Image (cartoon, rainbow, N blue to C red):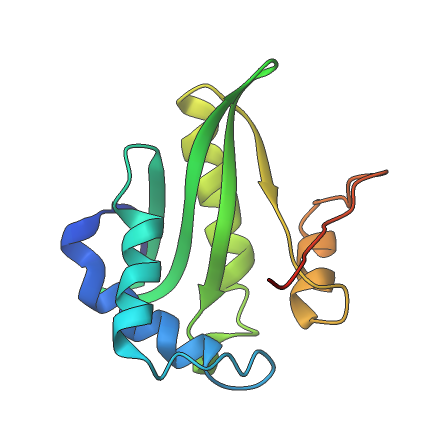
Length: 147
């Protein structure tokens, strides 16, 4: 049985475990070996007043995460996904698409108007989002400056 649930700070340890297992290997290779930094990052995502996080469960095992936040915009309430993942050994089964559809249905019933996210064009996630009806924002660019 597969279902989604809203997650909160009480789910932090299982969120950290799944997040680390997905993003510490190919294709992401993020170095989350500093446990304190990982704890702070996950707390930033799930422990704020505007945090909105979902878990995808299959047979009561957490296999998917959507960690984000809501924001009020002139057109209405928006959900910004900061991190989305499916357990590595469960990818390719259609679970990510199922997860997004369920999140969209849940948010729509709560009055949300849009979902926003960002990913890298060279990563497999880019094509996944395109296949699920998400469109690149025209005229938008991200900036970064190391200091």
